[in-house]
Image: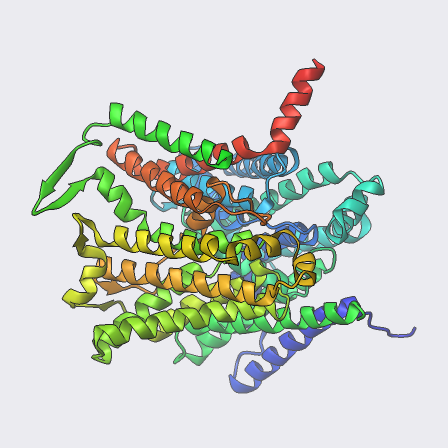
Length: 316
Length: 323
């Protein structure tokens, strides 16, 4: 088999190189960094960012954007906590949160499709609305006390905690959906060129509705996972998380103009963000704001790389 | 001025409703020659969003967007406070250095967009993420309190009986109007927003135009940052200018400047900013629980945008016609 790297895979390759470099450098510098425990922690601590990132990947692949993911995490986490607190069965509460999240995403998709409003604007309003609804549900953090809940959050398969397992399961499903279903192909086609996709007879409108519903589902699930992670719900959970999610998608090699990228890249992007965070924790003397600056620098590097590739693709 | 119609109707309706039904909304008192009252508060509180939305309007008119204004607000306040307090610099020097840095930050955004051709959302996202880190770096993660009468005047002072920020906004508005409508700059901005390639071929220096709008926005955001820091007499790198980019973008869109660029409406953006602030103030005065503020805001914003959506109007029209 001949190994050939196409131009579209260069950003993904760069992501792999960066992740490997960071991981190796950190493992050399800090004893105990290169261990299962740290890696599993990396997955667990970033599972809700990863889930929101998966939904965001689909939206960005289609050339759109979803700014409501962070607020959705806050809303669904506080909703689950509140319902459970009022003696609703946790599983029912989770189902309600997921259904509402999906429905809300679908509604935003409908506005984008039928009123032809820009995704940026609709999801921005959606973000305000969700954050507000979260505050309406409860202004304070609600701790979840339920036997089933602690059973679920303590559950782990060998070393993997339930949050990491859920994240990985959704990731596998997302890879399948993106690359092996008509829906996935339509998403890529819309991101490549919406007009062409329409002329090819692809269901552009329906795909958009499903896209935002999918993103709503993913971030609502991220909110549910947040409740497993912290055993509580909080309306301010996931503040500014949409930025990290977008950053993870871009660092993961997905083109922000849409049409090019891989769901697996987002996993790598999330891991890179997580490794930066872990390095800064391990270093001890570095202040937290270096995280933001480091992410900004990485974003810049990847965006410049993407530009370079795009310019080479366009002769002349 | 058809595009100013809906925002004005919305603002008018909101004001009318509050004047009639909200207790104390219309009350204006004059103390020491300064006017006080909730209407004046609205003007003062919306000054930061108004300033930022002036710049944002021009950026959006070139079919761009600037997400980094909130971070620039934080950086401006932090730098000014640091210079005044830790470096013992004079007020003029601190203001000049802050304005200079904000112009440089704007130029950074502009360079990424104009010279490297990065999409505006992405290009300005970098500074949005890194900028707050830079602001925290400047203040060492602390909140720097500023005790300087000159600095406090920026937000706390009065001019012609009105709060000083109102004068600043009026000044910046006049400058912006003079720049865009008094010279050909406005036309250049619109042509770049309409069709960049075509305007380049007809001799418009599209790169210079883009550089200008991002630097201008950086400057406006810096001014907003000074007002915010002066208002609370402190630089808070974490919370200064939080979400101001979103409010500014909403103000611009409500004001009738389309996100696709090519046209702009400066008075509209100011009306948009006023609308957002009137809404917040009214919600507070009517003692609606504070948690509903965001919900109401989102619904109103969506409503105004839907009113302006031609596609939706066509859709309803067509369906109605067919039935």
